[in-house]
Image 1: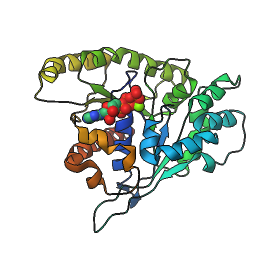
Image 2: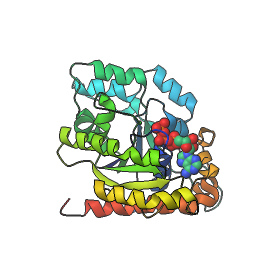
Image 3: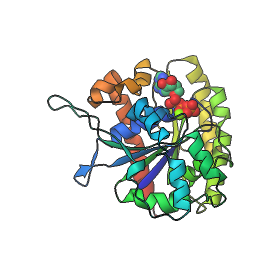
Image 4: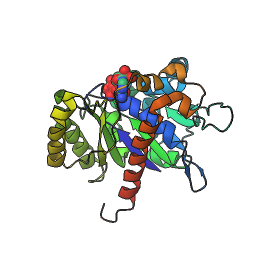
Length: 294
Ligand SMILES: Nc1ncnc2c1ncn2[C@@H]1O[C@H](COP(=O)(O)OP(=O)(O)OP(=O)(O)O)[C@@H](O)[C@H]1O
Ligand SMILES: [Mg+2]
């Protein structure tokens, strides 16, 4: 199972949105003759990604019964033999007419503040619990895990750091604004920290993805050279594909759409944009996996 974290330490840049886009499109791909099995771990207590995939009623219910990643990680730390079933939810496949591609089934795991705190307060907590204990269990049922990380984290956020250490690579959505670009060194710093606490070289940087982009706007023209200079300095690849700024894209992750439908219905005229971005992520991930020097 390959694991990708969607992370930028800056808030509100499109991490949760991109996580849902990637889950939707990658779960509709076939690999080795069967659909790719995708699980999303929503590590942000805000839960916007889980709400989008499951609806907020199911999110609230799972939280009220403690079926979240914090208590699960605590139990894993204590070496309990584990059945993931109570912690694993499912966004069902959409119903479609004719030959349209339905939104596919996606596994979802949820987090919440209290659960994360219970894990962090446990003196036995480890930074590698998710990598060493959860990842092998998930790998029995999934080909890909996508992790929606919160913004504004530091080494005290043990569950989020666990998520980074569990990840093979990171994609950072970035807005083409000075504020967003200036925050990149913090993001790189946290990724370095996760590498040091993990195996020394993972997660790798899959790339920075420009989100809410208006290619004809002044801001884009002015800031693009700056973004590329900074990416070179920090040695982060930049995606060739970008996501435009569009209300239709914000609505595609609206929880009102949690149930059913086809991919084209959900993404409307932006379907090709999102498909191209996710396609580039897929190619970069496979190039990285087959690189003997990585
Ligand atoms: N390409 C886009 N076009 C228009 N709106 C977008 C786009 N991408 C994201 N948004 C909107 O921007 C807001 C922030 O996006 P999102 O919640 O995905 O960011 P985030 O990085 O996950 O935020 P946080 O750090 O709070 O978790 C949301 O309202 C979302 O719908
Ligand atoms: Mg988010």
